[in-house]
Image (cartoon, rainbow, N blue to C red; front, side):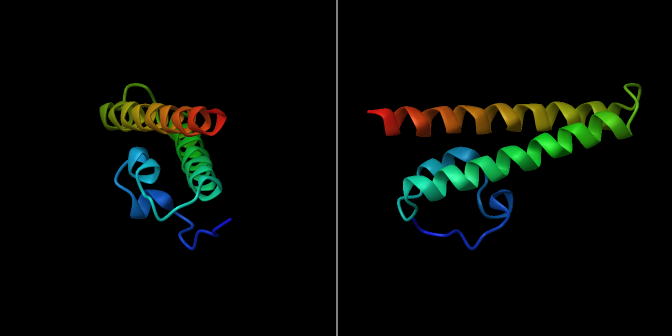
Length: 86
């Protein structure tokens, strides 16, 4: 397995599908990066929902953006795991 030197995949990749398309990474590294990304987004969503009121439009917009990002990461993880099964 190739160890990732990038502790924050969100800083290197524009979206989760870029990890899937990075041919320099092996399956395990892609999985590690996507799981790290998912954990980061989940943590931010939790913090966002706890720290801001629903009446704050910037908070609602940020939370919506993070939720969309979480969906993209979940889809990328599904794709990666489906490829591993075949």
